[in-house]
Amino acid sequence: MIEAIVVLPVLLVAVLLVVQAGLALHARQVLSASAQDGAQIGAALDSSPGAGQAVTDSLVNSTIGGLVDGYFSSVAVSANEVTITTRATATKVFPLFPTISLSAAGSATLERFEPQRP
Image (cartoon, rainbow, N blue to C red; front, side, top):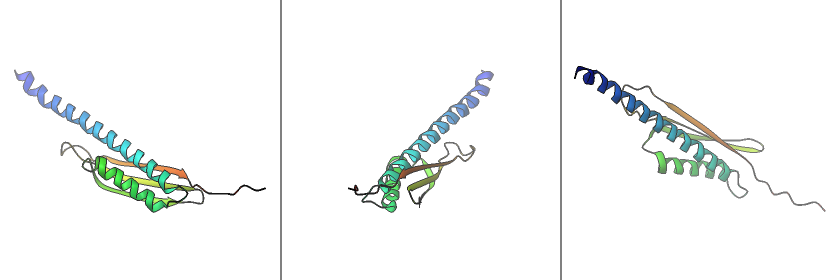
């Protein structure tokens, strides 16, 4: 009986740690996929980088809005590429767990129309 009193809280904390890690990994994957999708849309021929960032924000808010805190995204445009970076903090399952910072970036090459030369 005394063993159960010692083992049960340790087992519960271990289970909560596994759940926290799973939620953080899921949130990281969604951030990464959303950033990549947004970059592809932002790099499309008749689109803008801002439209890609809006798609990224929409995807993140509709899928993991409750699993992350402090979400924000930024867009950077170079001569040939659009890059969208996302950052957030995973929501804690147990208040004593450490804060898990998440970030992901997606890039896509800008589409350009170049007429064929005769």
